[in-house]
Image (cartoon, rainbow, N blue to C red; front, side, top):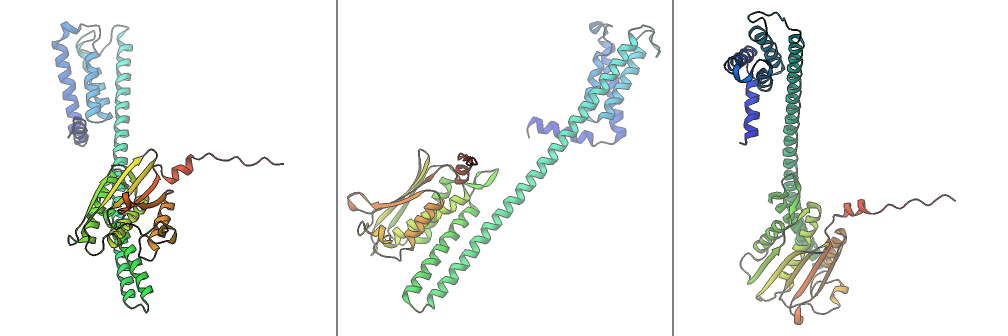
Length: 370
């Protein structure tokens, strides 16, 4: 606990004491100050008899409340008048300057007590507001976590339903389409599942993720679920750490899932050995995702235009890639690897969020009326 927190805890405890105990302690502080004043008369002299008594006023107001501060002010005025002002031993004031000095002391003491009490109440309001904010954030985090879990479960149920429909399909084409749709639903469920259990990039904003943890974690999940350690294919991931909103993280995760799944499905037939590499970096004002492999590569340059990712498949994957890239305000490209070995797929999208781009765009003035 920091010194400020310890002091705050102490003041809360002292202010919670019974009234009689607070007032008794206040009088004790004033009497102790009088004793110190009597001992140090030679050092302080008689010019400012009230100076030392501002200490018990301030201390009582800080430790207890404004009532204790006012009591300390009144008690100090009585004791100083009785012990230090002429004639000593009485409450009479003979000198013309004593009365203004006494009135000024009491006014300053009352003002100090009021100011300290005002600060106490302001701090208490700020603490209550902070506690309410913390509770609100906790509830928001809990609801967001629950939403992601429910979304993942619903998508998994949808995937299972699509697979059941695929088994009952009357044609091979319909069955393949349903199985591919089930795979996309599983991919989306996998992304939401990782978001549900992953750590946010900003503890104050759980709606943002760290790109390194997200991409590398998702690749580990893909390696386990897609290869199961049974296929001789390695999946290597390297990602730089940036903060990304979850809306774009979902799209990025779907692109990554589709590219890795496609490479595993079409790039390494007949138990072929190989490596799939995933890299996520920033280039100027763009994020760049690169997925490359050393598989069999593309059949030809016309595959992209024809709508197929490799030499097989329905073409839904490529259309999905371009659609997700468009939602990210980015672009997707794919080309054969070096010397025609493997495939390199690349997704580029702006670092600045689309909403911010729209807000920062200059507004056009309406045309002047003719």
